[in-house]
Length: 471
Ligand SMILES: [Zn+2]
Image (cartoon, rainbow, N blue to C red):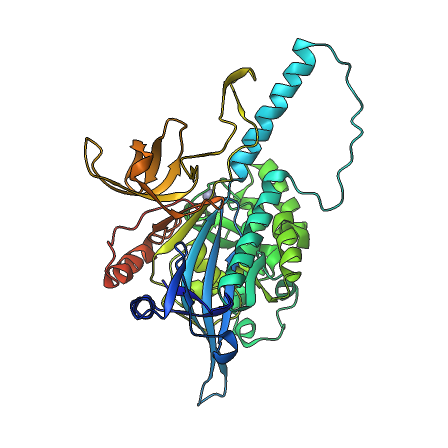
C-alpha cells in the first residue's frame, strides 16, 4: 500500500512507496502526519517544486460498503495500432463500510418509544399526516451512504493530488442496448455489449430463472422464442434460465414448454414486452452521490456495471468491491491490485443522548457527562503495552473508555477488556471511523478467480487464506 505524502505546507504530493517513506523518515526529511492511512509530511519540499501525475479515485457504491481505489493513471500509445492505452497502477484499496443499518434500527426503536409514550402513557389524538418531504429527500440511512462516501473523497483529495474520479452510476448502458451501432470499438466487437445485455437481463428478470425461480445459481441467456424457429436476438426476446431449465426447454417454443403453466407464461410475456425504464438501472442513492460528486470540481467519469464486469473478467481480476472500483470506466490495464485492503468502518462519534434506555424506552443508566476520561475518548486508536498480570501483552486498536479508567480495546485478535489507562498510548484521535487491514474479501460466486487471487497474494508475502464475504 502506498504512503500518502504532504509538502511542508500540508498540500498533497504524489504518494510514495513504503520503502521510500521509511528512508525519508530515517533521514529526518519527513514527519509522520497521520497513522491511518499512513501519511508523512516532507519538511523540505513545496508542492510547486514537485512533479505531479494524474491520480484517480475509483468508486463502487454499494448498499453495505463502498469500494474505493486510488490509482495513478498513465497513457501510452500502442506503436503498432496508434491506440491510446490507459493503465492504472493501484496505490491504495479501501473498503468503506456504511452504518445505514444501525441508523435505521436506531430510528425504528426511537419511533417505537415515542409511539408508546403517545398512545399508552398519555392520550393524544392522531394528527393528520401533513408533513411533506422535500424533493430529492433520502432516508437518513441512505443519506448517510452519500455523506460518508463524499467525506472520504474529500479526505483523499486533501491527502493526495486527486484530479479525476470514476464512479458507477448505471448498471448497464441503455443507449448501447437500443442502438448496437453505438460508437466505440469495444461495443462494435460485441463483447462489451454482451456484458451490458447480461446486466440488463439480470435487472429485468430479477436475477432468477424465469422458468423455476431458482436464485443464486449460474444463469444462462435463453431465447424465449428459439432462434431455430425464427426467434430474434433482440433483448426483448431474451430471458434468464438456470442450466437445467435451459436444457429441458431446448429448442421448444415457450408456449409448448409452459403449456401446463399458463400463469407463468402470461407473466413471462408481460415482463418480456415491458421495457425497463432508465430509472430502474440507477438507484436514487447513486444518483444523489453522483450529483454531489460533480460539485466537487473533479473530472467525473461515469461507468456502467456491465463495463466494470467486462474489464474485470478481461483482466482476470477477482470480484471485490475495491477491485470493482479500480476497474470502473475506461481502462486497459490495471497493475498492482494484489495488495491488502484498508477497511474503514463508519462508527459514528458516540451518542449525544446521555441516557441509556431499556427495550421499553425507560431509563436504564446514564453515561458520563464528559465523553473523555484520562485524556482518551471512545474511538481513539491506542497502543497498550501491558507488562504485568494476566493481560500482559501488546494491543493495538480502538479503545472504549470507562470512567473507572479500566478500558476495553478492540484489538485484531478480539476484544480485550479491563486494560488500565496508564498502559495506553494514543496513536490517533477518534475521527468517526474504525480501521483494520484485510486481505481482499472475495464476493460470492467467484470461486474460480479465488485461487488466482490467493496465489497472487501469497507472492506478496501474505497468507493465502482468502476470507470470503458475501457482497
Ligand atoms: Zn430454472
